[in-house]
Length: 118
Image 1: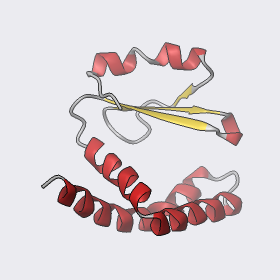
Image 2 (image 1 turned 180 degrees about the vertical axis):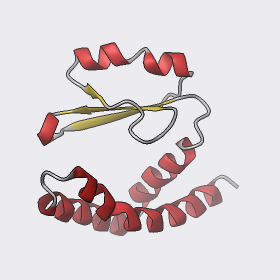
Image 3 (image 1 turned 135 degrees about the vertical axis):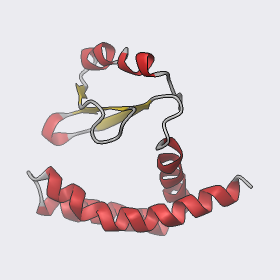
Image 4 (image 1 turned 45 degrees about the horizontal axis):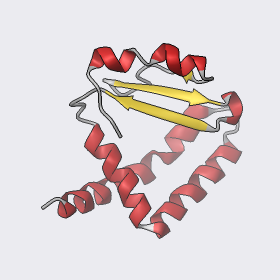
């Protein structure tokens, strides 16, 4: 994973669009650029973070925690599957439906992640 200065983050927009990604801008997180591929049947998404973005550690902790904790990872996957079926065309409700689970896992993940670094 590579982190870039802001001007470099924005420089990837044209290249990402040329290979089929849709630019979603910061998509709610300052200093990040978010790209999706596949439209309504999204197949991929990419986050490109600005160097020094305070959100990077939180995202990495969440990702790494789920990789190391398959039970929580399965619960998260099951929740996302259930919400995607219930809110097929309502992305805001889908996102809202994940919030409480994500906050709970994030707290555990950050503590776990920091304990690995000490």
